[in-house]
Length: 120
Image 1 (cartoon, rainbow, N blue to C red):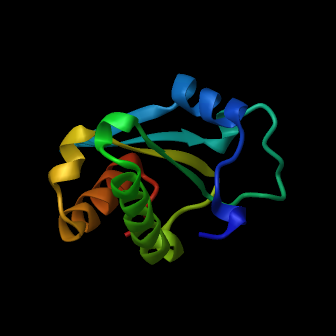
Image 2 (image 1 turned 45 degrees about the vertical axis):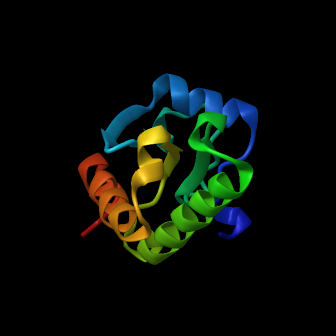
């Protein structure tokens, strides 16, 4: 994932957690915040930005890293169909550890559609 599409900074994550709307299915949760609700969002940079959050309860480090790589791959596949000006955090809980890649590949776009981020 390119840096331009990456959500960075503690304050950005905090604002999305506090003001964002949550959607969840089978241990995968997304928190979505439209950039109109963000104080310091610049008008030139209207790309959709994503951050990934996985707790230690998910498993060992190699399991967490693999899950992050899978989410980034799914994200990259759907990026061209996404609307701009959104901040999104993808949270993977313990229950999502039991899902394989194809199940995650179906669930994540469904959550993005429900949130109004995915155009299709």
